[in-house]
Image (cartoon, rainbow, N blue to C red):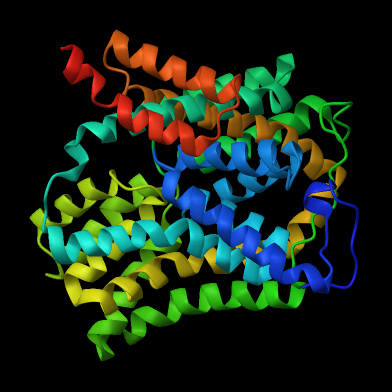
Length: 412
């Protein structure tokens, strides 16, 4: 990575660390990502809210504009968007190894929990526990905070607010795996038509984005991504392990829209082939809702049911490998692309669309699946107040939310 130079502290994503600070920077990335991996409940949209609170608001590792640009890129790529954002932030903070450690820290807690569930708990309905409902209320507060904060920066004018609201409406009225990518593309073209090549104050100049990944490495990563996608289906007949790797790799490569969308892909790959029963599949999906971290770790449960610990690790590596290859493959070129006047203008619309997509996700499934009573609304409002105005750390909000999960039963 670019380790020879340094810029002053407080320069956010434009910082480049000195060699003698690389170990400290890597440890910092791992520590923060482990905390997020232990406390980030609520699915991909909530994860982006947690990331925004931790990396942008609290630690200022990157500015609002760079975070929004990274989210826009990862929303447009196939794969687990929240995990890809975490990998990208880790890479920009501490090089490719930082991206790896950010992934490990964020993912390992749920991987361990779901593999233990597969090997020990055998289908208990953990998702029905009362404290899980409290954690869903935390997710409501976190996502509201993220949408509110991002809207103030990225959708504060008549054109951008309009793009955000229309994007939210389309995402809600025509939900599909391809709607998200289409909304983002149309929003970018709309901004280009509205503003021409000069956003005229809509978008400030972006800070330098030093990714820690060379363009040569990026090209190799993209070549490996497409090479495996083409080659693995021809090799799957040679070994059950290769067939298993191919199924999870392809699922991680072709899914748009986050963790919930990967469910039908995995079901079609594994259940008809006899890798896992329908009952065990659904039990594991329910348990995945009860753990923090990325929903793609559902693969860890499936692999553990199929082949024990080794299968769980193989499935985890296979389903997340495309995310690594795509992020490391595109990041070296993203900073240059986003500085082209036409691209910068399109990003005005794309970032507004991202706000709209998060707003849609806030309503469905987060709000509709969580706020079912006046008490739920009161609890979520108090959690938002404590997070946004009293500045309680996210881990404290998570603990408080888990405790409040028992309130409806106690008061009822």
